[in-house]
Structures are given as structure tokens and as C-alpha cells.
Length: 613
Image (cartoon, rainbow, N blue to C red; front, side, top):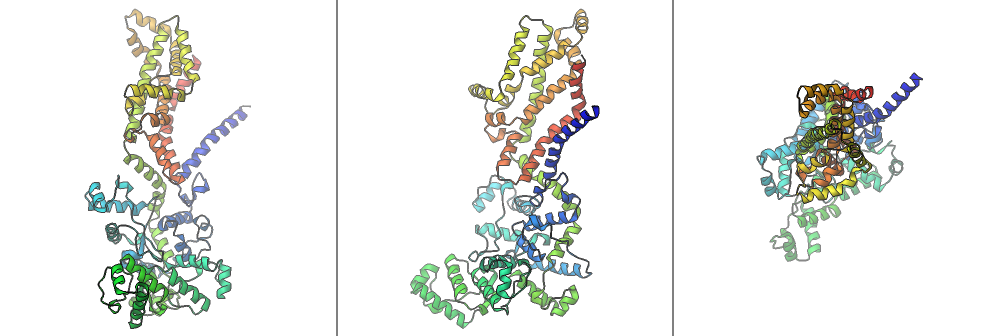
């Protein structure tokens, strides 16, 4: 029977501890593994899981098509890629040299040629933090000056977000933001190290285009007479493919979807003549052309065709329409990281034989040399594994704490509330209970009955009258409003009176003979002998004040008076991912857990001692 009772108790304890451990484990996960619901996330002990999380943060999830193409994966979904992805093989002795050459090439790219991201967190992460620090130094910490310069309305440095790097869209030239912000963002990108630079890869958009135009990989193989196992293995050719069906799709992609900021054109007399004729048909007269382009051409023959997309909106639209619809493809020059990398290899090594000998590759031409993205990712991961490991464990908590600590005075307000609640309840209720215990009043039982009757009503019932009373006293949005309604409660007075009644009356009689006052007896006799029950009262006061949300949210509308629970509630409403919400819940639970762990002996004495008496 004893064994059965202990088994039931252990099972009951496990039903309480297990959900907390799941919550604790989920609080250090991210988008890749949150739905695993493990007590110990897999990346803690498995290298491949940690590497997958690293890839997710580096490529920001939405751009995992780049990873799928580079790693030859049959899926472009992070949640399913963990089953098929393999750790890159870097055993080839010449691989480090290949990676180093790729990294040096990335450092030469202009800022519009690569995405700047390395998340390690939610909502921008490392790059966003570096961008905020860059702007902070640029404006000497003056947020007003920043807002005036960019015509922004930022309230906090932590709210500043970088512009969005656009690597897709036919009509999008670069960054859809104000020009000053763009220029500073480009300058900032030039300061980033190699591992925060991800050169744009055309295969992402190319594969998306092929899926929409052709369909499944089986349909593509049938149309092209090919045998690609999945889309990530379909290459993006830098020149017209020999296969007619492939060539048709490739040409349509260049004309419809290729980002024009990655395009240069070869201008000759034929192209310029065709462009002038195009403008003549569109505008009819030179005067109409000048009004639209804000120019002063004397004749259509004065128009010059630029080699790259112009800046003006109307100029750009005319140039884009002509290049996309009428300019022959043999005038196209793809100005893209892929083509620039081929140019880099050609200038440095001269021939494909030299490239293969230097890097151990087996490419047939320089244009088909695959950049060593997987090896680059893995070598960086291997060299920085310890830092990456601890970063993933702490990043969610850092983000939650950074939000709490920079938003108002949540921690300070909560400290004031908890301290005042504990001190108030340990002052008011013990004195009331001591008076009822020491002085044998005829109506003492009626007083206790009245106090216990207050427990029949939930606390929400008293919120409205308490709110109206504090409003009349002009105490809203003050610490008094937070503390005063919780200074005493009926159950606490009843519990303390019962404990005081159990104390030996001989001690009080001896103290009376010695001439001690009631306050002296309370301080020298009652208080030392009642520490366990005082600990229980203090714990209850701490839990009620620290965990109280509704009253604090109702009585203090000013953000400067919000407590920690109110800020955490506000944080959970701001479209945050679930793993950050779980991390905020763990942070909220830790103080109560620590108080119980360090005070459990005193608490147990407060529970057991009254039973023995």
C-alpha cells in the first residue's frame, strides 16, 4: 500500500514537472524544431540538427530554396529537410582553399549583389543589431536627429529595422525605401564579414518560375527529355541551352522575371535605332517625350540607350518594356553574382583545368563551377560551433529580456509592487491577527466570520468598486493603486490567528509579569516563533503581487506604470513566434520557482508545525 501511494505521488508529480520541462525545452528552440516538443531539443546533442538550425538562421527560412539548390535537396522546406540533409563532406584537402577563394570573392561584391542577413534570433537578429549600432554611432545616439534626417518616427533604437533586400521582381530596381536610408544601408553592408553575405542565387526564382510554367519535376522531365530527380538539381544556364524546350523556358524567364538590376545590355546602332522607334510609337512627339522624361531632346535621334536600368520611374519603365519585349537576347549581359564568380575564376585561374587542379572540382567549364556554399557553411559552423551552440540556447531569452528591459520600467515597478505587498501583508495582517488572538473579544468570532465571508467572492467582483474608489481618490496610475487593495485578506488574518492561538500562553503571562507591553511581546515572542507561518504569508504575497496581471492592467493604463506581467502580455500579443512566447513564460515562472526552492524548508515548517501543535 505504501508503495502504491508513493507511485501515485510520483506520477502526480511527473504530471506537473513534465509539462514544465517541455516548456523549458521549447523555450530554447526555434522555427526549425519548436514542434518537436522535446524535453531536450535534438540540437543539444546532435550535430546535424544544430547545423540545420544554423542554416535556417543564416538563410532566414524564406530563402531556403538557395540551400535546397546548393545542397541538392528534394525539398525546400526546413521542417522536412532535416530528414534528408547531410553534413557537407570537407575531407578533400583542397576544399579549404576553394572556400577561402569563395569568401574572398564575396568580399569584393558590391552591396546590391548580396543579401545581408544572419539572424540568430527573431526579427533581424545579428544584422539588425549591427545596423542599429551603426546608426547609433552615426547620429551620436540622438534618435531625434535620425528621425529628422530620414523623416522617420522611430520611438526606440531597438525598433529600427533595416531595409528589405529585394532579389526578385522584374520591375523592382533595388530597395523600395527612401534613398538616404538606402545609401546608408549599402555603406553599412560593405562593413559586414563574409559569413553575413549571401550572394543572390538566380536558381531560387528560376525554379519558382519553372514550377508555375511547367508544373511538377516529372512534367519538366517529359517536356525537356531530361531526368532531373527534383527541382533543386535543375541548373540555371548562363547561356542559351541546347535543348529547345529548355531554351524557350530560359528565354521567357529572362524576359519576364530576371531582376533588371542584374542586367546590362550591349548597345549598338541597331539597338539604339530600335529603342528610338519604340519611344516614337509610345510618345508620338518629342514634346510628349520631354514632358514625361523631363528632358530637352530636339529630336528622337538624340535619345541614347543606356546599358543599365535608369533611375527615374518613367525612364525605367520605358527601358524595361523595351528590353523585355523587343531587344534580342543576344544583347543581354547577365550582371549577377553567378556570372561575376565565373569572371572571377577566369581572371584568377585562366582555364577550367587550372580551376579543377586548384580546388579538386570536376566541372566541364568555368561557367558550370558550383560555388562551395555547403563547404563554406559547414567550415564556418565547425570553427564556431561552441559559440553557435550557446547562442541558440540563450538567444530567445536575450530577445525577451531586451524587450522587457528597454520597455518602460517593468522590472522596477514589479520590484516596488512585490516589496510593498510583502512588507504590507507582514505588517497589517499579523497585527490584526495578534489583536484578535490576545484580546478575548465577545465578537471575535463574528469578525472572523466576516473576514472569511470575503473569500466567497472572487477577486474580480471587487475590482469595479476598488477601481471607482481609487479613481475618486485620484490614485490611478500610482504605486498606491497597485499595493493598497492587497495589503490584507481575510484568509491570511484567519490563518495567523489560528497559529497565534497555538502559541504557549505561559510565555505571554511571564512577559506580562515582567512588565512587557503588547508590542514588545509581539516583537520578542510572537514574531520569532511565527517565522514559518510568516514565510507562508510572504510567499503568498509574493505570488499574488508578482503574478497579478488583471488588476495591474486595469488600474495602471500608463505604460510607465506597467508591471512585468503586463509587459509580457503585451509582448505575446505582438505577433511573436511561439518559441519566444514560451521563453517569456519561462522567464515569468523562474522567480516564483527560485523563491520556492530556496524557501521550501521554511515553507514546510510553516505547514507542518501548526499540524503538530
